[in-house]
Length: 640
Image (spheres, helix red, strand yellow):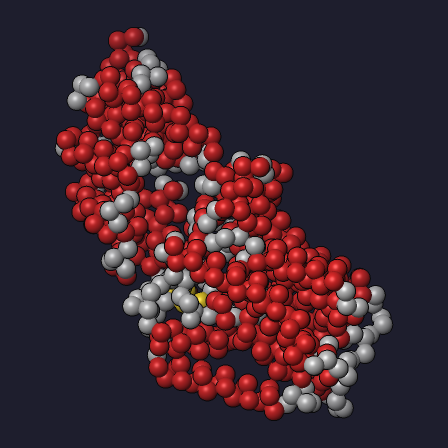
């Protein structure tokens, strides 16, 4: 029998309080930046999304398989954000928070309608809204697909409850439409038909009045949609190279990891310590897998045994087990062993199990009620504190990946992304340290080799950079960027023929690559081939200007555009770009040097002296900067 609802507070007030608390806790994300882990692919570097919502973008959203997924509704939501607010991280973050708050209220309202058990429904909604495991889904802009698909999942469940109360074609179609929108937001919601069958068992208890075959037949259209979405998703991810082969991760290893991961998620639910944005895939230990399998089998057997007296145990447990199937690793996508975001909907099952078990205990005589309330309060307070702290780790890329490095071992992805973040902020020496760790952990990753080579190049450690760039090309011969960096390395050492060859190969792979046109143009200028050089520099100019306009906070883009203007003889434009580079990245000695040289050419000797002096302060052995400073000081004296 459903528990009686308390009457002290109206339900709408409880829902409003839940929304306000969730919003207040997550509000700190309004000061967070985009991170360099998928946010670039979804928003900051995505030219279609940055154009906002238009018919071209809508067509692209429904035909694109970018980010190794087909999720047009997610793309459209990002486009709508840009249309309304521009490419602002605060707006994108707050939309995620709003959706998550609405999802929390929807979950509470749906459970209350299903069971009339108010405080268990509140507990489940609180856990859903404020558990640390769900921070990743909300605080990460690229995980809009989680909160968006969750919204449509819950709408579909709400529509299904309405359908069971009074069956009609229109009400069933509402279930279908919400489900389709969910699938087009994130295909993980393919398990919804299974969960609806669980609701038929409890708390709807439709199985007691309706033949099981009819209940299953009723789900066939939804199951067909799930099957279609699963096939499309697998093909898209396989085409993008995101699906690992059985040779790379054997099936036995995947099964062992899946069993261990099921238990680990429960452990993190109860004690959410050492959470990270990415957990590296490690070889599972057989004994752990066996122990995990026995534990899962034991809980399942217990839940089945308790079915007649406590149906919520089996429903909650199967909800958890079933909704994790698409992301448990049997089909290995990516290089992570597990991810916090994968628990967004599955953990509702564990929360239901605990909430109704706690309500049953609280109904017994003695001090059970106080014990349950006290334990729930302690757990809620602890989760809330950790959630607040966990949100803070998402403030920027450096903070996020420093955290991941500190709480995981052998995490080459975290070291690589931390290195990239440090490189972009001008902390190149520290970036090299993390790239070197990533390279040792995963010596066959082309991107790591390329990033390490590029960072060494920025430190003028050119003889060290070249082998890493060449290795990157051997591992991934189609990387035009690696050829551009290799060309830059050759050019800096005076190996102009080899530099030109590298740039031309980059252009063969990517004919519109502005960095290759720019690099080849500068090499040709150095060789006295001014007309051919200008052709390449002019080809690079429009794209570099567009890149700077799209990402005005990226110093590398201003540096490249400054060099291009210098090559074209547009001195004042070049000065403006190098000045912006050193404003964004004050530690950039090369940019200070080039700015000094250009200011000297413009006769602005006081400013040139300051620029050269800053380059020397940052790099005392910078011989070219010292010569530039002497020249500027002599020129200033002659003028005086």
